Image (cartoon, rainbow, N blue to C red; front, side):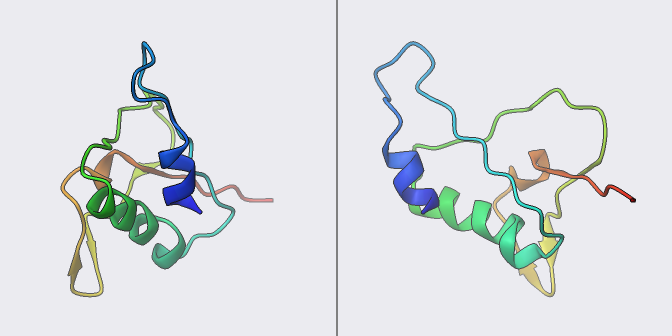
Length: 81
């Protein structure tokens, strides 16, 4: 689904388009791994800094797997209830 969302962006628009990927999961498989997959499958796609100062940056590696060098631009946010 993330690849379909990326492919739906208009690269010729003034911004090139943005996709916001957000989950309610804390698992690396549903977060950094999905972003890493998208970046590897679509080399013309790049992550941009959100400017958000809360949370922590995404994992650069996990369980012996190295992610795309820009995955650290993702944000991990935990909300206690």
